[in-house]
Amino acid sequence: MSYLRYPEYPEYRESGVEWLGEVPAEWRTPPFYAHFQTQLGKMLDSRKITGENLFPYLRNTDVQWKGINVTGLPQMDFSLSDQLKFRLIEGDLLVCEGGESGRCFVWPGSELPIYYQKALHRIRSLNDSRATSPWLMWVFRVAVPLGIFKDASNPATIDHLPAEKLREFRFALPPLPEQRQIAAFLDRECAAMDGLMAKQGRLIKLLAEKRQALISHTVTKGLDLHAKLKDSGIEWLGEVPEGWKVLPVGRVFRESVELNRPDLPILSVSIHHGISDRELTEEESDRKQQKSENRSVYKFVQTGDIAYNMMRAWQGAFGASTVDGIVSPAYTIARPLKKVESKYFELLLRSPAGASESKRYSRGITDFRLRLYWDEFKAIRIPLPPLPEQRAIVTYLDEACGKIDTLVAKAESAITLLKERRTALISAAVTGKIDVREL
Image (spheres, helix red, strand yellow):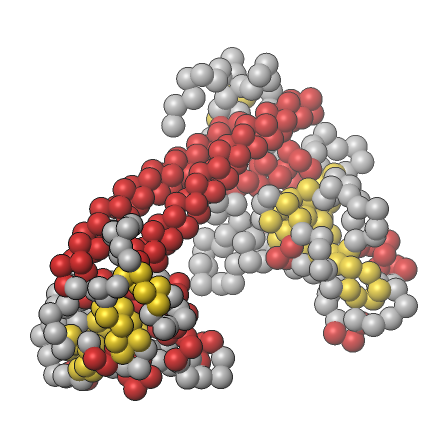
C-alpha cells in the first residue's frame, strides 16, 4: 500500500532483525529484556476460591486488542505476598500467554485492586527504561499477525508464548518522545477507522433487518398492498390475503425417501444459504460434515424438492433444490404434490416466524437436541398463494434482496479495506517506514 501522503525518515539503516528490515537511523533494536520485565500471573487453584483475601482477577479471554473486560470477573484468594506480586498498576501491559499468543492491552488502572492469572504475562517497564508499554502494545499489534511468536520449527505444538521467547524478542525503539508521538498518531487514526468500520457494521445490521422484514411480510401478505385480508386462524401467520389457502404441509408436499443415486453430487443445506447447487468442499461448508463413503445411503433430491436438516430446522435450515443431487440421510425431503414454486416455501420456512413454528413442532429436550420429523412437519399449516402469485413473490424478492445484498457487499468491502489500511498503517508507523512526528 502506498503512503505517499506520509513522509519518510531522512536516513535509514539495516536493523538486523528480519521482520523489521530497515529502520530510521536513530532508532535502536534492543531485546525485550533490556527495557521490560515480565511476570506470569497466579496459578489457578480451585481450593482457593474461598478465603479471607478474595479479589477479582483477569483471565486470558478478558484481554482483547480493543480493551480489557472488568465486569463479572471471578475471584480467588490472594495472600499478602500474592497481592504484592500480582497486583496490577496503571500502565502495565497484559499479554496473552496462550490462545492468540501476544494479544495485549495496556491496563488503564482501577480504584479497586485487580489481579491476574497465569495465562497472562504482566509486562512492566523497567524504572530506568526508555521504552513505554503503550509503544510495546503497538509493536505487538504488528508482530502477532506476522507470526513472530509462533514456533516455526514445530507448528503442531499448542500456541503459547513462554517468557523465555518473550525476553529475546527484538523490536524497533525510537526515542521516548517519538514513541509517544507515534502512539498518539495511531490512537487517533485507528479510532477514526474503527468509527468508520462500526458505522458500516451498523449499516450491515440494518440492511439485514430490512431484508428479513421484507421477506417475512411479502411471503405472508403478498405483493398487493390493497388486497383484502382474512384471519388465517394460525397464530404465526396472522392475516393472509383472501385468495390464499391455508393448508397443512402434508397437503402440499409428501415425504420422499428415494435412495441409491451415488452418481449425483452431495448437496448441503445451510441455515445461511439454503441448499447448495453443487457439492461443496470442506472449506466452503458451514460445518465440517462427516461424509459416508457409501453414497448409496444418501437420499435423492430432485429439482423443486424442499430439503431440510432435521436437527437445524428450528434455525431455518431449509432449501429448495435447483438441481438433482443427494443429501445426508439426516435430511428430510419434501416433494411437491402439485405444481408449486418451491423457492416461495423456502423463503417462508426460513423466515424467523417459519423457523419458530418449526421449533414448536420439533421434538427434543434442549435446542441442540431438537429434531423435526416428517410426521410433525407435515402438520404445520402454511399459506398457499395461487401459483402465479408464488412466482411473482419469488421474482420480486430476488430482485429486492439482490439490491440489498449488493449494498451489504459494498459495506463489507469497505470494512475489509479499512482493516487492511489500519494494519498497514500500524506496521508502517511502528517500523519507521513513515514519519508521523509532525502530524
